[in-house]
Image 1 (spheres, one colour):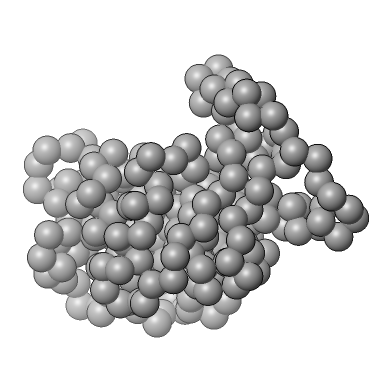
Image 2: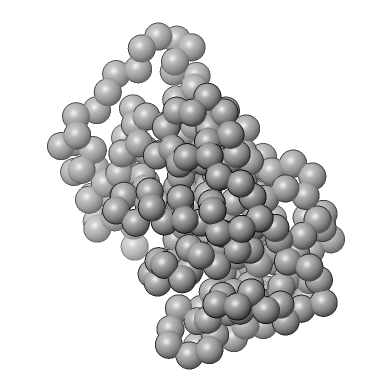
Length: 221
């Protein structure tokens, strides 16, 4: 089984994907991960420290936090989104990774309070339909986490855009959640551009379901 030290290293490296894909600015955004299982490691998460530049992140700066108590076992202060991540982990036991970004196109949809509609086969593949919109919630406590769980626990999408805020994605691993964040911004951008050209053509719901099933059960090695 993976150790917490290995998870710290993996979560640290995954943060490189956020600025390289233009999903964050300065110190905003974060990734967390946990080891799925029944031992104590499952009850702890590794998350980005608060306010550090991405180029200054190292495995040692990653915070190890108890999911139930938010006790911090690290020398650095943890992210202001830690309570949100912990709430999601407590209520979605299948989730092993969470990402938060303020990626510009997806956040633009959040600013106008609109879900990202599904007009593309790639979006049907990855998200199984539209990317839903969550209600406004304040930062720092469990409020955002409650809304993420409420919306995503019965939804195909591994991504949600929070009104007036940004993107949260979930996955079985932290890498899966990063992929969802990258793809969320990609389809948000394309959907925005499509609306500038005219009225996007919708995909039939039955076809969306077939595309999503193929992608999740047949596609890949």
